[in-house]
Length: 136
Image (cartoon, rainbow, N blue to C red; front, top):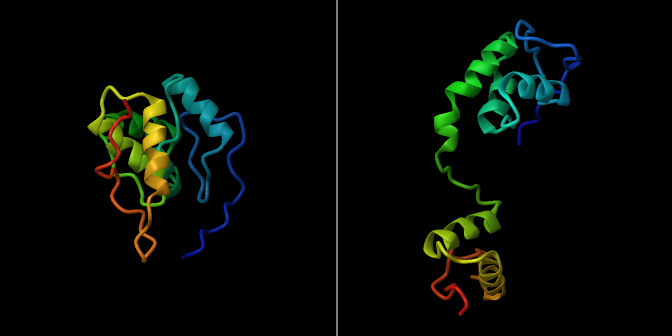
């Protein structure tokens, strides 16, 4: 894998909408505080904002706030869950098939799924095996 460039010195408080995002800026507590102040308590660093901060050195924090608002519809849509997050993928699939299922039922189905034999390649198998029905 390609190595990420080391971050330079990140932004320090105080920051405002005219503050320019420096090269290598990380999603820091200084930025989180600024965005929560400007956007509100619903702000969080999602994939859209992490990518924006990483890829838009030279832009202002006001532009980042506009980006947050511009990406909310897309952020609300379901997105594929990466293969490394097998548990999350399993739960999403299980709850889609068992909308009234409880957390305990989902966890029992997960444990049954994980205790099932694996294929020789080490694959975890399907996201929600046929035998993962909600316990009675």
